[in-house]
Every structure is written in C-alpha cells, then in structure tokens.
Length: 203
Figure 1 (spheres, rainbow, N blue to C red):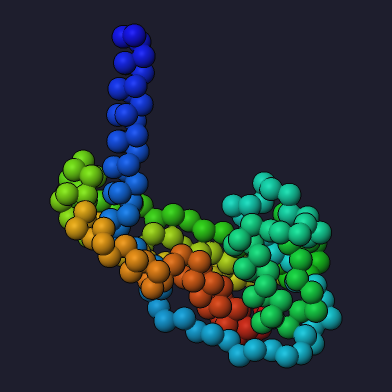
Figure 2 (cartoon, rainbow, N blue to C red; figure 1 turned 90 degrees about the vertical axis):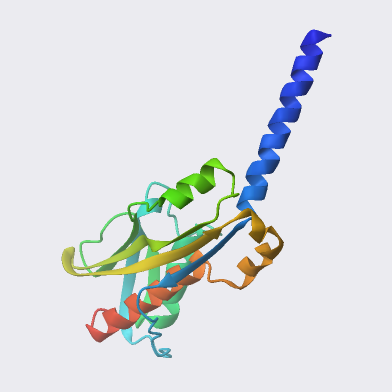
C-alpha cells in the first residue's frame, strides 16, 4: 500500500508541475519583427530565363530533399513557393548539393546569442510571478548566391523578437493571435532577399 501511495503522490506532483509549466507558457506574449521594413518585389508574370534555379535550405539538408515528395519542411516549401512566383527562372528545384552550372542559393539561419536580464531569470525561477520583458535579435536569415558553383553575393537579414512574460497576462494570451509570428517574419526576409537579388541581377 505504501508503494501505491508513493506512486500516486508522484503522479499528482508530476501533473501539478506539468500544469504549472503549461500555465507559464500561456502567460507569454511574443511578437517577431524585422529590423528593416519589408520590401515586396513586383510580381513577375513571365519567366523569361529558360534555366532552372536550385536552392538548399541548410538546416534541412540532412533530410531527403527529393522534390517528388508531396510535402517539404515548412521553411523549404515557403522559399520554394516564393521563388517560383517571384523569380524569372522557368523552374525552381530543391537540392542538397551545388550544381556545377547555373544559379544556386544556399538558405540558412543562425541563432543570435540569447539575452537574459535579472528580471527574466527571476521570472523563470518564480514561474511567471515576477514580470519579464525582453527584446532583441534572435535569428539571422542568410542567402548565399552561387553562379556556376562560384559564390557571387551573400545577403543576411535579421529577425527580432519581443517577449512579455507575467502570470497576470494569462487572461490576455489570445493577443498572440494578432502578433507577428516567426513564419511571417521569415517570409518577409525571403521577400527582401528576392527584391535585393533581382536588383543585383541574380534572379
């Protein structure tokens, strides 16, 4: 019976801890933004370059990037869709290697060093009782353009994040539905790259 009581007590403690962690996540409001305003390119209606544009998304390069797959990882699919709609190339393919001939783009993201204030450290230890506000650059999206396997140009764009965490924000968690999500900021950076690469004559 003692063993059953101990198991029950452990199960209750684990359930309470899990509930506290989930509640703490629900007390956080997050918004992503760009360091510079997004520049959307004009839509190209004609693909006048009779060539194939290839690209690699480095974090996913270890996965099978067979373009015959029905679904691709979200970031890869987003880059592919935008390049197909906005570039002048007749076709866009995903590959894990640089082609010897033609235009190729390496896409990857780096993570900025984490920023933590004493207030945010105290917030973590108190499970949101002490309020925390943090703002800073969290990612850099990189685009390296290769032509005939030679690096021609590198572009990079930053993504910043604002975070407010406090247990008193629990009733206002729905605000996250109207903040800018990471996917939107990532897409905006792809648009910025396409605009700049078109200006430089690569796309």
